[in-house]
Image 1 (tube, helix red, strand yellow):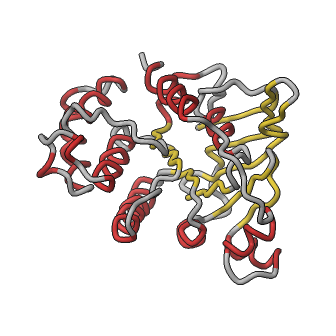
Image 2: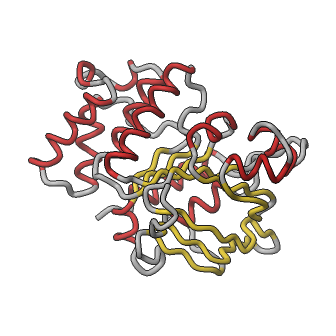
Image 3: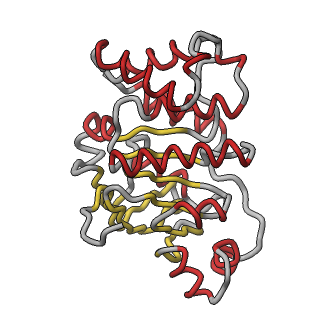
Length: 270
């Protein structure tokens, strides 16, 4: 990545409190336009809360966010049009076909029918689901559903794609295929990719820049090489464990929280 690229995401002293609990504590980081950015941390570290603030689901207690030049508090619709998102939990309608899921998303984003038809066909072809477009999603495997979710997230040509553990539970072949495709889109369209993962080798291989959050604070950021040099380790996983410790953590957000997140992001489209 060029060091002269403008920052498409700017986060300054971002804080979220729930009473006496500080979920995110004065976090600051930037993401360059066209970068693949990994946001890593143990369970409960503050990743999900931060993403919710970046994607207009939660209002910060304090601090500043700029997404594609817009303030998510003042310009929610413009910010929402700037990004696509793939949630950790399944978010497709199993009772609809792949094509119907894509068409519904196009309606939510108010894409012209002439444009959306071509884009849907193109994306379904890219994710190898064109021949299954008229099949109900409930008949799909986990990998097929994930590919469809990513196609849906790309439908409106977002400037930024947020991915919350996009390859969780997928086999190595599907994981490799998904990342190969996303890297090609990243290069071709200069689309910024912001993702979380617990697969450290994935982040080490894919990400241009990495930020590690723990207990609500950014504890380190840089390239994978920077982080390994800083911790005098030979892998990103070793560096991660050295920075965050070995204690097992609790999940940050419940399933109900994630359902609310999906409802707020997509239900708020006008």
